[in-house]
View: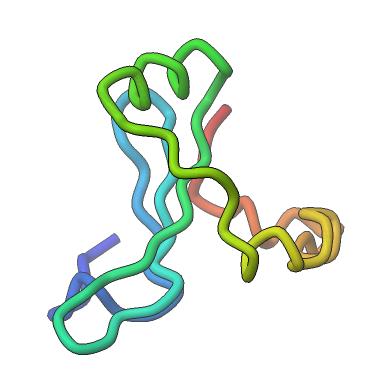
Length: 82
């Protein structure tokens, strides 16, 4: 599949070689907010090792559970492998 001209287009979905999936949630004023799904806990822990924990983001904590974003027909997983 060909990349869009603007890589930071809302809902653009990218998959890394290690199975990590990244989806653009919003892009505004030169900043890009993404959501990342790691293939396993170990990959997540490795990636965040050098990061400083800042607590919970209240806006994200108030979102509905992940199941609310799943279509149930597999279309949300199109193009990804696990």
